Length: 114
Length: 155
Image (spheres, rainbow over the protein chains, first blue to last red):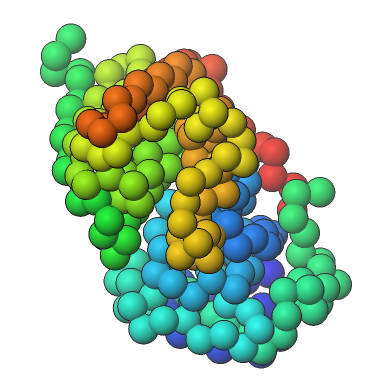
């Protein structure tokens, strides 16, 4: 499934990275600890988190994740969106909780590692 | 031999979270441009990022030296900062001295140094309290390296 299809299906709001929405999402990873994401996420995954600060952009870029979904109706900080624009990283938001959004993504066929 | 060795030196400003990750990104891009296998690039990116974040969060400044030969990637960061009183304790997974402010941002999981070691073929750390800390990571580039990250991935 491409990121664009996920955005449309789950009604995510796009804040940045509009040019990179056609990428294939290979799975998802949920974590709010940056070292954990650095270590355990996989290239091509969509990262679900409640972190809104700009350091998430470097992690997503370094790990070549397809995007970041900020959950729970939180708003990414302005500098986060600015940095994400510079780096072409899609930052998305959803009003759902991590559990509810993940459940729907899982139902749609997305997986973590297994 | 020398024409096959690439060297770079970066300075890192301590306590500047805004720029955090920039040096790691540059290193990642350089390694990709050189054409190293994805697994090597991934490991080097993790080590660089954790080293850079430690320097940014705890030190006043640091110098990141980066060397690539046909056989190894060397990542060495020497900082000027408070140092680590007990390196063995600091190497334990889950141990962190990060203030609440950093923990709320998702740092300070106590995974940084163990992650650096885990992703290195050789890893060393020396620290002098009141002076600074030096970490060095060596990642070997072997011919057998494949895209482990991707072969593990299951759609």
